Length: 65
Image (cartoon, rainbow, N blue to C red):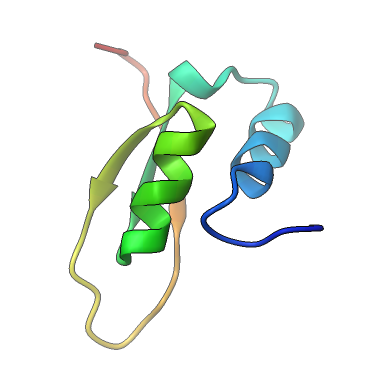
């Protein structure tokens, strides 16, 4: 990655590798930069509270809204 959060490159690379469009995934993160990254990547973003871990997951939406 040339740029980290909140730039969308990480999400776009994951979508490309999974063969999915950004509107087919949801980013679940625990920081403001996760939410900013999701918004700039064009994916749905959902905040979670993580106490001991700092991990960002991409969850596939089987039934997009």
